[in-house]
Each structure stands twice: as C-alpha cells, then as structure tokens.
Image (cartoon, rainbow, N blue to C red; front, side):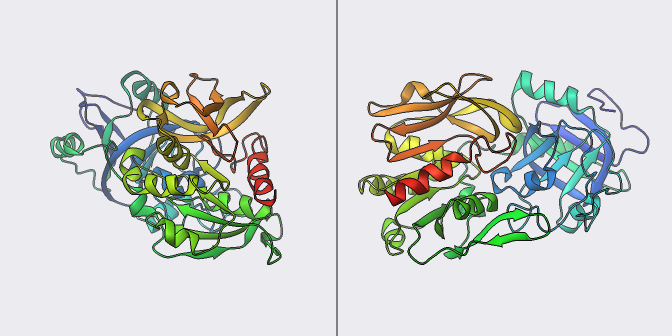
Length: 388
C-alpha cells in the first residue's frame, strides 16, 4: 500500500513516485527500469488502459489509474492510438496479472518494458487521487529499480525543477513530420479495421495533427470523408494545396497558448474562408483562442470515460470521454461565439460554435465509446456540412 513522507522505504519496494510537494509513494516496480518526470494525473476509465497509454494527448504525463485491474486483458497492436506510447508511466493499485483475453498477444508488463515505460503497482490509488483533487496535478518523478536502489532526494529535486506543462508546446513533439492519407474505418470483430472504400468525389478533410488519435481518423472515414493528415506546423498555403472541403483540428498535449503561437494564425486564415471546421480537445482550445477567447490551466483536469456533458441546444446529456488539463474560459467567449456543451461535473465549457455554425468544437472525445455512441453525431454533422 502507499506510504507517504515521513516514511522509510518498505522492504522489497522496487518502485517509487516522488511528488514535488515532498510526498513519496512506494510500490512494486514493473515495466521498464529507469525514471521519468512529468505531471501526475488520474484517469477514471474502467477499460482502455492501452489506448490511454498511447494517446498522444498524454505526452509529458504519468497516469494514476483509479480502476484497480490494469493489465488484465493484456496488450495487442490493434488497440493503440498512436505509433508508440506517449504517457511516461502508470500507477496501479494491483500488480499486473496474466492476460485473460483472446485478443491479447502480449502481457501488459512486457508491453511496458518493450516501449520503455515505467509502472508502479501496489499503490493506494484512491488516496493518491484524493491528494491530486485537493492539491492539484503535481509535477512528479516515477522510478523503477529492480534492486530497490533509489536516491529519493535527487528524485525530489528533479520533480521540483521540472517546468510543468504550462508554456510547453508538446504538439510539435508528437505530430507527424509529413502529410499522409488515411482510409481505414472502425474496427469490427473478425475483420479488424475496415477499409473506407470511399469514392473519389467524397468530401475531403484535412486533419491537422497536434497529436491525433487514430480512432478520430476512423470516425471521420466512417462518416464518409476522405482524410489527409498534415503536421501541426503546416501553413495555410500547405493546407489549401490539398484542396480540402473542411478542416479538422485534432487533440494533443501541452499548453494551447504555446501551440497557438503558430497554430492560431493558420486557423484564423481558415475561418476567413467560411468553410466548415471541427475541433476536438486541443483543437477545441485552439479554435477558442483563434476566435478571441482565453484558455486556463485546470486544477486537476478531466480524464476518464464517465464524464456527463449537457448539450445546450436540447438539454440532452451525453456520457463522454475526456482528457484535458487546460480549458477554454467560457467567460471570455466573444460576441458571435456561443457555448454548445457544458460539463455537468463542474460547469466548465465543453463545446463552442460560431453563430453561423460553420466552425464548432468540443472539449470531450466523441470518437471514444463510453456512451457508447452518444457523440458520434458530431462527425456526421461535420461531414454533412461539407456536402451542403
């Protein structure tokens, strides 16, 4: 179980998490040996740990999983959201057991090791979650050493010296480096990922990759769009060279204000065309900035697959997946921009749209399936706008 300062290292402890406030949590190390520094956050999802670990939006973060049975279904090459894991490591309540799922091709412990990601198990994750809720998401170091040898004082210094996520443009680090096309649709049992098979005259979407999840690309294809992905650094001219009917702004990690230095001018130029635009997560925040709103760092962020969001147009409640530590400040929305969705957990802004509806965005992840399909309509709306 977790132990906090002042506490000696328990016998047999091979993993440790050191928070910048001096809290030290001992556990059983797993995955790769080593140490990593980042922001410690918690995720409340009951499933999808492999998707979480490979979501580029988790770059620079250590995940405290509140669900105890992490690793129980193993790992496979299909359930990934990016080409490699982006979360730095994970904290778990229980030790990883052998996988029990017909789709598993590798144990989660071995998967973590193969990708150089650190795990610490045997932690009171509920107590750690309460700590984060009360004091905010802290900078922290996660470490694993099979011999149980740690320099806790040095780890504490490293946690305190890390700059934190504010001011960091991580989108540039996780984005693709060159454009590519995407034509795979959603996954189906016994079939894998189905090819889109779209006609040449299908609406064409350019998706800006700030850390895009593959599930988003699949839903764009499922809604009937041909998709071209471009790097986060793509200029307006480079985007227009693809002759898109609409622009998609993806999710991603880091501070939207930092990414916005180069992204916002491009978005503003696109808005001037009057063509449809759809943004998710970081893309939502960047659209907000481009329209004149401001973003703020949240106390603990929203991360999980059980977040209720109210659609203001008709009062419908959608059960959504969220992963963000920054938010658009609803009080700063300018004239001509309205809120479209709000979080029922804390009232924070969860969606916005321009008065003419040509540009809209949501803070949550409609491609995820907690509802399970509560928010898929947003992709159909966007692609429908391209055809009108």
